[in-house]
Length: 508
RNA sequence: GGGCGCAUAGCUCAGUCGGUAGAGCAACUGGCUUUUAACCAGUAGGUCCCAGGUUCGACCCCUGGUGCGCUCACCA
Image 1 (cartoon, chains in turn cyan, yellow):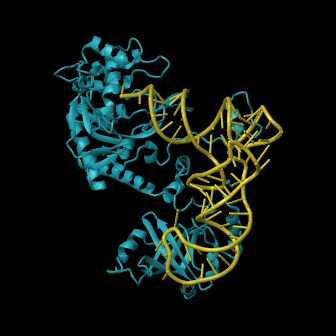
Image 2 (tube, helix red, strand yellow; image 1 turned 180 degrees about the vertical axis):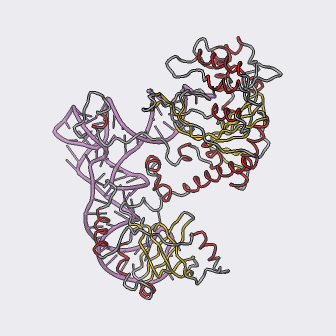
Image 3 (tube, chains in turn yellow, orange; image 1 turned 135 degrees about the vertical axis):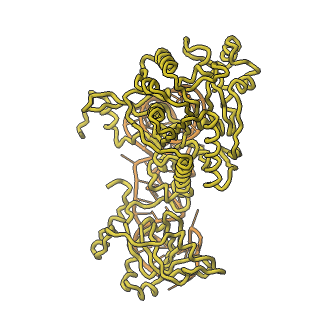
């Protein structure tokens, strides 16, 4: 038992068992959803076909208003709330005429099934006048305060199973999240895409630049990494001839947490043979604009207090133009001017990382915060894009874009690099530049796949959590994750001491 | 990792310029057959996050720690 349990409720449970009532019956009931009852009830001016009919609903009793011989109680299920009215006289004429004294066993938070006639109160509220009340599951932990719900953020994230029914609007965010995923799946399948699943355990890191979580497989005696991106596996499938593939990939990055970073997060990645990065722009804007229209009924959204329109097409701007615009006309090609600008901003990179890395840092510092968007930033410097195809018009740039909304990076896409020799070169360069303390090696097998020939292809990655944030107006990624990553709660001081190898806890 | 803030009843929150803690909701007892955060009367419920320190006395002040939030840094 936990410290949440309430002694009064435990005593009540014992009394119920003495009275022969099973507080945790094995079977559920056939119930109509609250939303369907509302639909069938109509309005008091225009009553629906369910008025006067006997209906059954099942859900959580959110409270009671007890008038002695009449009790009103709102019942909530996944679709909404409906009031039931339990009257002494009516219950005594029902199938359980001796039930009335058992009302004392009910508490706010209990799960119940109610059967009765649908009607109205004197004030015109749709109400089921109960004839039978069945306890479905006794709540031993008392619910949060009925008006405020759960307000403490820590409690909300740790006990989402309470937050979901006790706090206004929380369930809707996750219903919307599910609909967004569903919309995307339908959209891509409509364009001939195949949903695939690729490994989460990677022997070689790749597809992004991030610190990994490491693990070990015992039977193979092999180090493995939780994937930081599915990219290289999905492109192997393009080599394999599947031509149009997507995956909702849970990725893992061993980095800091913030209001837009969680150690595990969901990335949609998709790859299409014969397409290029301009095609990926069209897919991005059509998909996002369509999701907003279908699910929200509008493309006008509010995020972090600002209004945005996600109506396609989105604005497109070149990386070098934006750089010059926000840096007093400094050209990204002018190494001395960029260095001076970086110094002025206090931006530094490790020595030896070179000019283009510095350009990237200055860009992040000066341009990104202004990208309200939605806007596609196109043609990134090829030097910082190891997996993208260089622009044939000018190979200094890559055929790549990132999509920004509200200053937040939402998507990243390119025309995929399919030249195995150039890919090998870029991988080797990348490995040479990296911090020797961090894992990373050339993915020889991936290069080998390219040697068999990968068709020209466009690829796109969309941060699903961030997209959901934007479309549901949530400021923090934690509010669109059912169970955001949290530090483990230490039960006592001993558990802290045992983190020291030399300490042995007597409790264990 | 840095800075700032928060931690008091199951929940939402007051409070004490240092003298041993309160309200509303939830629970319990009683009353009430049309409420909408029902109402009325009463009862019970606390390691004031943890550990030290200062003090005659600490929930309050100091130090350290833990958890969370915000923010900065990190983050192709």
